Length: 296
Image: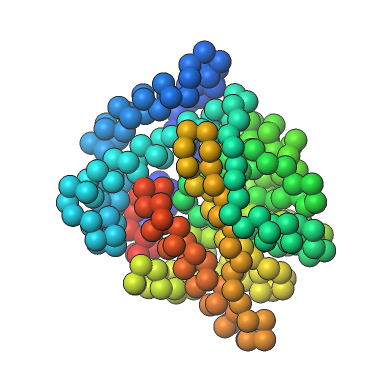
């Protein structure tokens, strides 16, 4: 990934402090659907002026999904509209609006959260993983989430306020890599560690996996942590179903613990890549990836 693309995809939310606070306050009088309607119009301008993001998404639908030109164009619009709704939903949570969470794989969560050992919860830039932390509370295990440290003050303040009541600690990515020690300590205490496992940031170490029929590099770090700590790992994707409902898909990452550590790394990474491909094929307009993923 180029440095420009890296900076673009750090994950900072658009808008200044005043705009974001006004958005939150507006939910007291403005229905969620009105915000969605505004987003539907604004997205058109994003498609016009953010041409690189448009092209990356369009090429994905054409080349990877095999859609025709018109269908690809329509899906680009739906994709960016859905992304706008994800942002709106996050700020709706800051205004105490509730969303329903349903889980596919609850038995996996029940087993892992009541076990002695910690585990890794690996997400990706699909759906809206953050909202699960806002809407649910773990009674059995504390959750530690690795997050980009450069978010806006408004977002960071609201994250901290909501998460503090739900057994969640946000661990900022640190330049000195001290976050790695914090997360390892959490696993040693039998807690849960949540990491996004689909982007190459900071380190060039990668596992090469098959993804939509071609080889893609996935970061080694999350899978190496699972191998070194000998803990289980799950893929964890939170997908929007309707206005007030999200569905969580939890899947165990398959690995042979009798294999060498190198083989275990590859098995975990490929299992994650396969689960991610499954969810992207199921929800193609909820994969928020606006650069050439096959060239990162």
